[in-house]
Length: 188
Ligand code: GRF
Image 1 (cartoon, protein in one colour):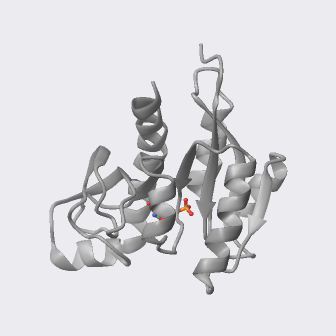
Image 2 (cartoon, protein in one colour):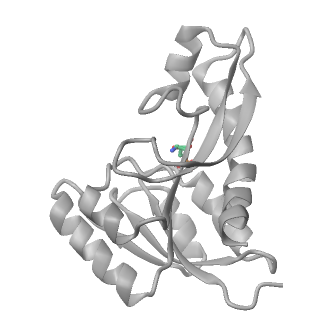
């Protein structure tokens, strides 16, 4: 049993299905984390609703001015004694300076088998390239996009008749499994 759970923040931009899954995981007895803060760069992110329903503090910062947004984020992260940041569909690139302040404490999930298919429109590029496998990766965040040390990966077969939608759905299911597993791996 975990005695003291690690205070965790989740950064989102949109749907928040990984956030929803992480909240569910965090409520389990064996989970080493408790999610106490959700930060979104998008005030209409659907994921903010999950935070609200679960009575988790939410903050919306406009990352168009990244310096100000990061400063505001940093203040609240320190105030709330956050020790782990999980990026879950967060569509902004954090600055080197911010990452340095949380060195080794920021992790991300990406819907491909990194180092393959870094960046946006992953599934579309996977289908166009006709590779047989894709997947998902949980990795530490470094100053280079989708390039930090890999924590965990899961391979997913690409089917002949896959569309962006069907592939995304199948990979998301695996994301929900590996994100909690990766957290257990680094914290236990
Ligand atoms: C996921 O596929 C994640 O790997 C990527 O963005 C997507 C976010 O989905 N970084 P959701 O907002 O968690 O539903």
